[in-house]
Image (cartoon, rainbow, N blue to C red; front, side, top):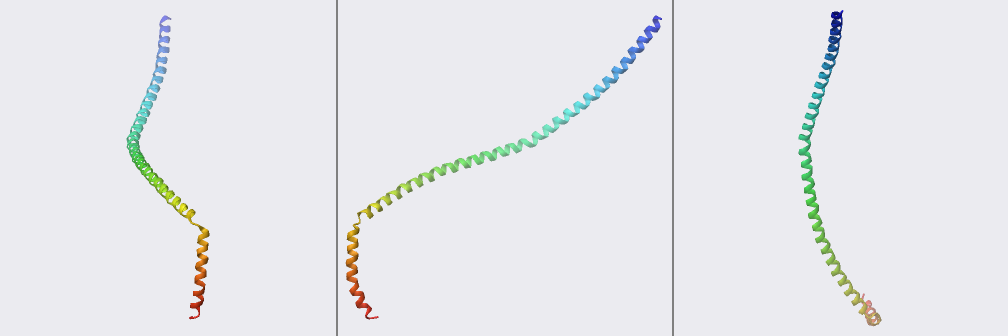
Length: 132
């Protein structure tokens, strides 16, 4: 009887070993699939980095060039603003002088002179109109 017990126990152990072996094979297959997936992901990342890094560097170089151009243009704008400011100052001086000159005109005398001129020219105009 003891021998039968040992045989049954051995058979049970064999069956459990077979079940465990099938689970280990499944686990091995899953680990292989996971390893291939990880290698695939790594290769995709490697290729992506190889493709994207040069493009990013090119974009950064273009951005640097654009920033340098903006900086240069901003410097030129400062010069233009200084020129415009000096032009405005010169123009305001000229306008002030013109206003002073207009304010210094004696319009009553000017009107009187125009009237005198009209009085002198009227007879001459009548005289010359006779020869037409």
